[in-house]
Length: 218
Image 1 (cartoon, rainbow, N blue to C red):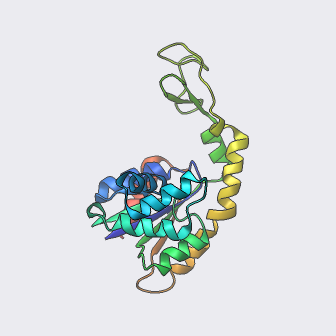
Image 2: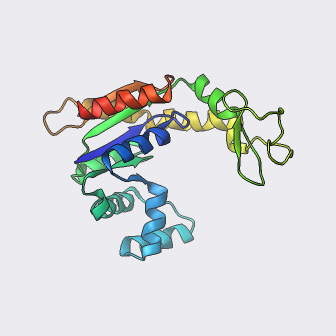
C-alpha cells in the first residue's frame, strides 16, 4: 500500500512527479476537482450532495470532501494506494483526514523559492487557438511572441501574470504551508506515522524523480 500526499507551491512540479510515481507504483493520482466531477457524474449520494451545494454557489464542506476521499480510495484502482494531489490544503482538512482513519504512508514536500516559481510560471506563453504552450527561457518560440506553426501572436494568460502568481503563493503560504509542520510532527508519532521527505524542486526533473522514488523504496 502506498498512499502519498504531495505538498509544495503551485509550479513546484508536483504534477510531473505525481505522474512518475503513478507509473512506478501503478496507483492513481487523485485531485479533489477530478474526484468531485466523477462523483457527480456517477450520481452517488455524495455526488448528489456536492452537486446541490455547487449549483447553489456554495463551498463543499471538509466533511463531505473527506467522505468523497474515503469513497474514492475504496475503489479497485486504489488497491495498491493513491496519490492525493491538492488535498489536504489546510490543517482542519488534514486533521479530518486523520480523524477519519485514512492512513497516509508518505508525505512528500517539493520546495521551490517564490522567486523561482514566479520565473517559471510568468515565462509561459500560449497560442490561444491550439493551446500550444511555450516558455521564454526553457521552450521559446522560434520568433519571440509568435507561434511556430501559425505565425499568430502568443498571449500570457491571466493565471501566468506575476501579480496573480504572487497572490496564489500568498494563499499557499497562508493555508497549505502550515501542513509542513503538521506532517513533520505526525512523522514523529511512531510506527503508523507517515514518512516525511523534503526535496529541492530547483533541481532537474530527473534528479527530483530519482530522489523521490529512492525515498519511497527506502
